[in-house]
Figure 1 (cartoon, rainbow, N blue to C red):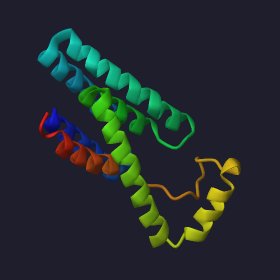
Figure 2: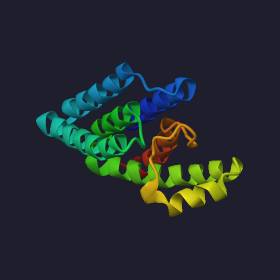
Figure 3: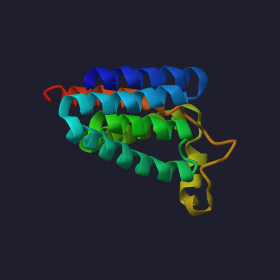
Figure 4: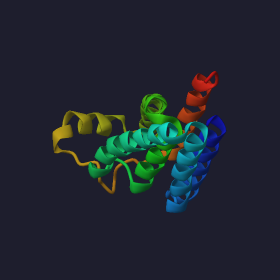
Length: 158
């Protein structure tokens, strides 16, 4: 599971950095690999393990997608990671991604000199939309890949 997690997340990070897109073929391959691995390892129970992880990750990221805070590739990537990791391990990845993403976003806001503007936007959050052409934007998959590395370290005994 760990090699699959690292390989898939690295491939997503590479394509997201290069093209600002994560191809459907890659996310489909990742999801199928997760289902195949757990199905081979634990039969129907393994398929159920992957299905719950896939569904939970898809459902959570669907909210971000509908709010226009994440793209469709991010949604499909995280659903595939849910199939690879299962629900409980995916949730660890999600938390690590959230924390790491916040740190990276803070660094970018400071580096771009946008602290004042960001603070004003946060104070008026109810009047903001996440889909603005002038908004600072970061590719999500590289942050997920680094969080996947930390997740792999945490799971190495499993």
